[in-house]
Image 1 (cartoon, rainbow, N blue to C red):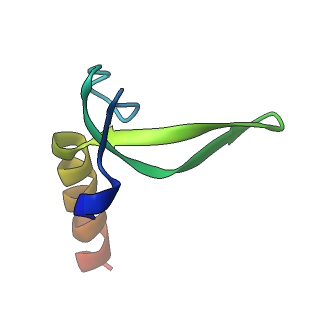
Image 2 (cartoon, rainbow, N blue to C red; image 1 turned 90 degrees about the vertical axis):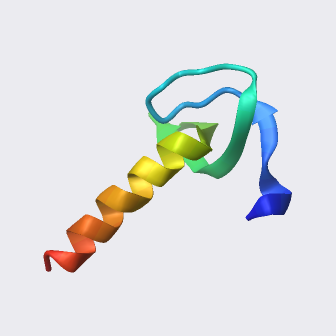
Length: 57
């Protein structure tokens, strides 16, 4: 994933700007879409949440 990091805005929760972010996919709403980026700390938090969910199954 190292090659996909860019400088931009985190959309995942912290809303920091001008930080290293990675594209997670498009956000779609009412027929429109926008790029969805996350910084490393927010992405790490999301990964922990996903792994916790998967381990509880």
